[in-house]
Amino acid sequence: MNFKPSVKKRAAFSMRSCHLPNAAILTPMPDASLLEAFPNPSSSPYTIEHVAEEFTSVCPVTGHPDFGAVTLRYQPAPADASGLCVELKSLKLYYQSFRNEGIYYEAVTNRIRDDLAGLMKPTWLQLITDWRGRGGIRSTITATAGDVPAIYLAPRL
Image 1: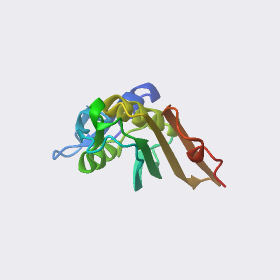
Image 2: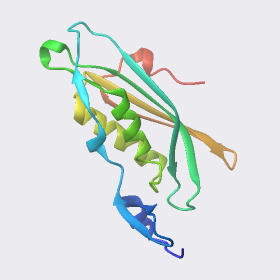
Image 3: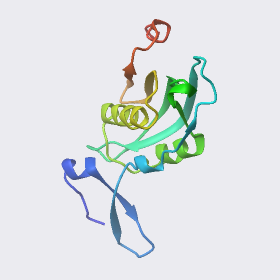
């Protein structure tokens, strides 16, 4: 297949093969509508941390796969303030919607932070993406929403 969208188009759309030979469908990705939430069961403050160790997307320049881990850490708003928690299967499916997305590390991290903060409206949220090295360079990107406690802002060694 000789289809090569521009960098601008690759940032907005992904190619998925369909069952027909040499055919492709352009589908908008990632899909925030996959995310679901449930009511926070507590009015007391607590911290939730989810780690997805098998996150993948695609480099928008080379088309090579990018592999990383995503750490989501947040304090849901209290139950008496209609706080929400993200449902894990929906989070997994949302992360998988990035699989064929041509997107930079920084854009991935900020997009996930924005989508999750918009869904849950937590007291605070921290999203860390830790990308496996390519060409001798590893990258860690951190995006936050709200006032993240200092204990979680300590430099990583």
